[in-house]
Length: 55
Image 1: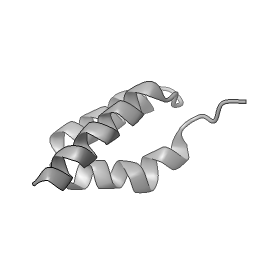
Image 2 (image 1 turned 30 degrees about the vertical axis):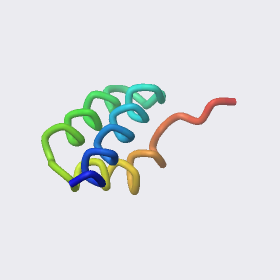
Image 3 (image 1 turned 135 degrees about the vertical axis):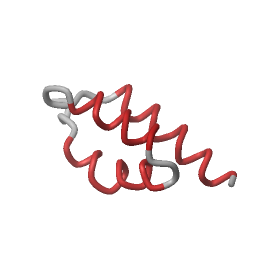
Image 4 (image 1 turned 180 degrees about the vertical axis):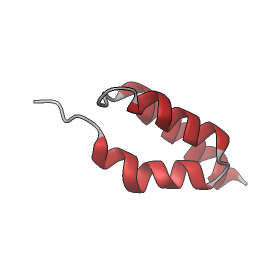
């Protein structure tokens, strides 16, 4: 239970603070919020690769 909460909080913070193309940020935040436990895991596996890297 604690792991799920920590993953959720870290995923939301990471998604909000990073830049994405188009509306990808909104999509990832919705996935994290609407898909319990698997949403944050999907974000860390797939979503972090799609963000725009800072120069």
